[in-house]
Image 1 (tube, rainbow, N blue to C red):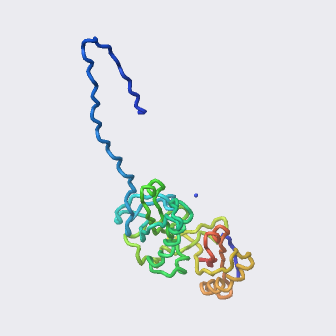
Image 2: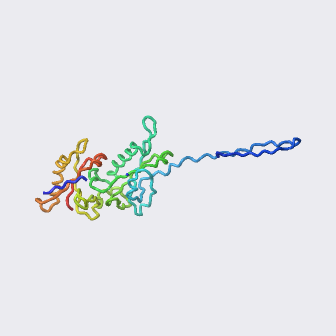
Image 3: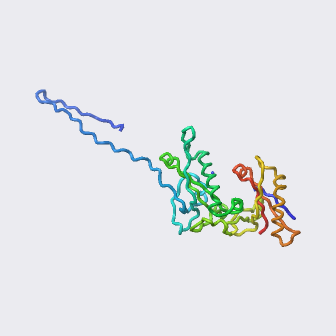
Amino acid sequence: MRRLLAAATAVLALSGCTSSAPADEPVPSSTPSPTAPSTPEPPPDPGPTPEVGECHSLTFRQAVAVVGRTAPVACGRRHTAQTYFVGRLRLTTPAGRTRSVDSEAAQRQARTTCTARLPRHLGVAPRDLRRTMVRAVWFTPSPARAEAGADWFRCDVVAVAGPRELLPLPRRTKGWGEAPVLEMCGTAAPGTQAFRRVSCGARHTWRATSTVDLTGRRLPRPAAVAARMDPTCRADARAAATDPLDFTWSQEAPTREQWDAGQRYGICWVPA
């Protein structure tokens, strides 16, 4: 048995001319010209509101941009994101102040809502979604659009193919969560220099098998993580091995950054 450990963004100037006229000639009086009515300025344009079911052709960088709106494309064309929920941001505080659209509170509302609704859209349990390459990404209006009245947030589903690359999506993603191409695999053992997280539809040598919940307010020490994960990871490795006495597994603990972002679980890996 071998265990591998891994820890895995005008002033308008008026000039007057005067002329002198003979005293016996009346000086013509100047009559003010009528003032043209001013044209009211058009109200600021908040832009269109996204709709559920729209598809988007996003790059990896666009998918993590958060603020802004990309134009939809026909879902019959190649696309890498699909909108599965559109909500309204709470931009007014209980004290009556207006929040910025890119404030932590506004972004947290979008993040938590989109993350919670993704498993339901895909038709899988939240726990099972951990071992896939599917992710929720969210977008909010630009500050200028928000000042004009836009208060939407948009939830899109994307699937990561590999480092900084997105998978093309089908025309319809509702109920798509169990597609084999979405499963999480690796190009090498987690923790090694050659490791890259990829879709199992790509070339790979390791695959994720289980996730193990980790408790506590702080990220546990490596020894505590190993002790917590060993039974599950060992059982997965034994079940996948051809020889019950000779098997290998790797356990991937969350990094501090991942832990602070809310990932409170580790991932068990076995050779593919």
